[in-house]
Image (cartoon, rainbow, N blue to C red; front, side, top):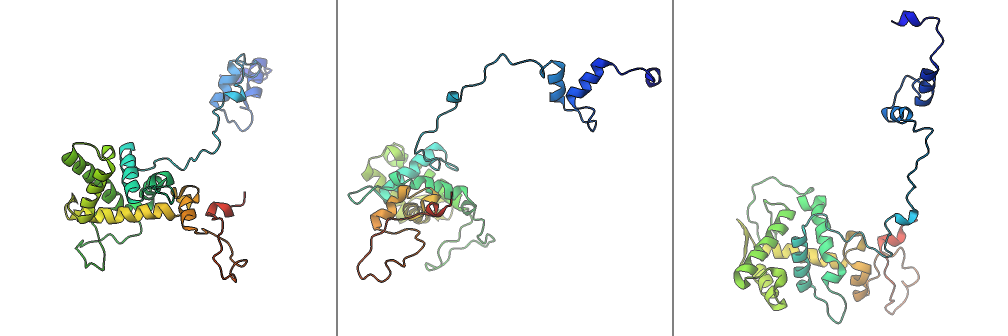
Length: 257
């Protein structure tokens, strides 16, 4: 069939088609471009008005996008927040764990490699060590926390017929005390004492860690302790005999924009 066209001038419509689709350049054909050429999309003007810039979602000033769950479901996050507030409650000295965002710190830690014991020796045997050795568990940290929360919830419903987040503060304290004493079982070989000890450490970390990690909102945990945070230098106050109060700084403050 090709021989019949030898000597004939190219078809103008075909030449126009190749010109607009770019087929003549390297022999590459893009389906979307072809579709636009065939439908006359290169010459047509769109009748649909472009979206107005005002139609874009508005970003709220001061929005903290770090305060969002990455690991917990909503029920687990609420239980974590309630339990953390009982361990570090709001008082006259300043905000409690809830306001400081401690639950989000714990959530982010469990979502990280730390939550799955990524850098921990994980080969058995898993035996109970001495009191000075600490726990060496066969389950991962995120499992300890989630199963501990579930055991706490089950104990609350068994004792008070209510969810933990619905309990009065003194009732929540009673459940947490039982966990601390090891009276509530989490899973075979693991009691609530192991869960409570790990949970309490996470709460205190969330109160005093750099805000980068999700807790210590607005460095309020540091401000309550008059802790200076991440300062680059102390040369201006190192010779002073009196305590020098400094406005705390976070790692974010050293970021060059």
